[in-house]
Length: 514
Image (cartoon, rainbow, N blue to C red; front, side, top):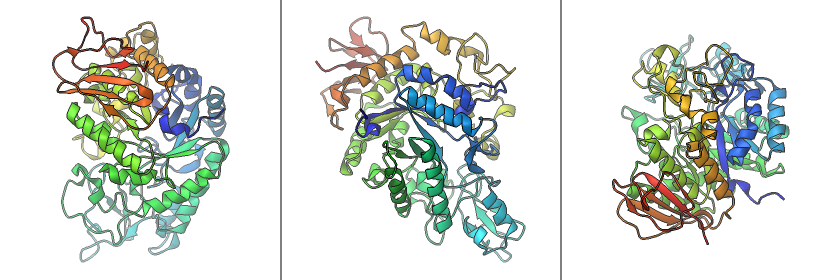
């Protein structure tokens, strides 16, 4: 029997195929590599997987520069390979969500090639955001917008016009006011829904519509702004009509297909608009991801996000790591904190996303040589920002030396550090105290509990300690202080040993309902 509204409390595992497992021995992960390890993901205890882009692409931005949305890049396999992955996943009881990238295409996309070959004002150019420049001879960009990857967000073409790219110049922004763009993406959705995907994670969901007239922001360093809502290229009201139309497409298919917004939007009252009853099903809670290791800050974020989601009848979607941010084992300051944070997250009502490798306790690889880094954030910024390669190093599966069973090639596309030998799947499967064992135990226990009402009940606790009852009556105590605190009797799971009956700093404990 199908679970009602399965996404409301699902645990979904993000697969970055390029770094998951390499089946053909070329040093790069691929779809057959993912398929081969689906039993591992089933045994981990997740409900679904999310695949980042595997489409045809020049790979300027790790596949987020898509040249053909209806085909698979040869480095990842073939359409037959994705069909086989879908079939095997469904046989194992796993749903599959795929990425869709609607804000921009690759500059190698036939539409953009046609746009460059066409005259200013042509219908081909109208699919993108082309504008004349400012200055006496149009030599200045049309406005002061900045690229997320550094530098101005505009590139000039030989005939003098400029095109917008909020990311790399190889990723020109689409014009979502154009009916052909809207029709094309609805067609792409149907192409993959017809093949059996269970939903879509929508890249840069908050960026499709730009403010009328493309006004200047008026100040520098736009990427450091805490509130993205004030920028004229993020979170414009027009995006919601797009997603209402997408919801109608999703609802026209059986099997509870879902849409998930990657929307870097604050405050939660703005974010919850993306998960209104007639729009998308989930939106990542990045306020939770960005919170510091602080009981006060976590409680404020949890309360605010649950309250905002409740106003539209949605559940909250929690996340601690993904392919775009520093791994939380490093970001929070220690593996102990990362393990405790994971138990806290999984005890909260709603859905949770895991990023491949966090179940192994992988840290960020900070010392990658410059010559192997490929992230445009690093390349366009002249190395001032390390970029995201450090969280994309391939998974260690087995063995004592790089590349730890990821590939049979002499080297993987990014090198793993020698220190990862104890972190392989094979090594951790033999250790009952490993991070992998903790994740498996937590997910098994979580699944055995009913989802319950999407609220938390806070209990009195010492300073810098969180004590709450959340999903399915599960009680979670998290010690974010610098000293041990009393630990109630009868815990079902702890993130670290508790030898003296107290809860050490940076540790969490679960208590199941009686």
